[in-house]
Image: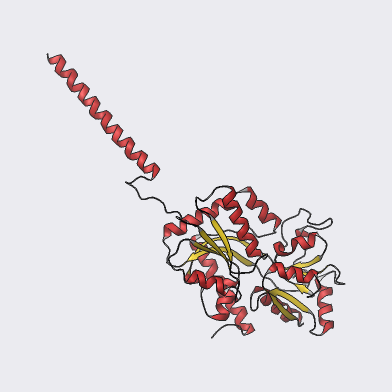
Length: 346
């Protein structure tokens, strides 16, 4: 009898232990699955608008559409993402839409330096009114001329501009933006003068130079590489303190690395441009972190790495406090350049 009682007690103890392990395992499973006992990570619940504050065909537009393609091809997001160009007012149209969408996590915007230049020149917005997500890369600027130009170097080009007495036309994207800032910097460094002609996007700028409607541009590599490869354009120098590291041939005779820096070529001017992702102000940390993680996964793909190399980008990527510090410094640098040119709104 006592033995039967002991066996019954042992069975009940084992059953209780099994029940305890079952309960513990269920709780663990809920934790892994993000079950009701734990808060789920945020993710979009409808289509995400990817705003491009510039025209079609330019560097920002090309990068945004490439990111969209990577996300869709690799199923990195459950909801769809659509690219929307809003380049009016030197990008102010796009930035104001995002600014006015405060708290909406279903809008993101790709930024270039007009994040600073348009805001400083119009006083309509400031980068601190947006939520920084990720620096995707830094973009270079190259001094381009038509392939039929007699200028074979930046020094020869500057001599040609000087001899023209202020009649040569520099094409660029928008007014009082990075292209015109670089143009003014060249004018001051080389003591020359251009007629600056603004266009809606970098794609149009390259087309105008191929057609001979302007004499030079300071387009990004990705905006003019097709025309260079096709023999329509000639690069003279890159506005950075080091040559681009990409040594693969773009044309039969040249790689990006073969292009001298403008300082090497006798034009002492440097400038690199932000390619970053922002959200409206007022979104939650979880919403920001979702898109930061999404962009991290984009950068890890082989497609992105090829894109960066082929477009001759500087692959620097930043998030969080490091990105905020970079933005704070960059704004002050732009303020100094634009104040000197008389373009800062009082």
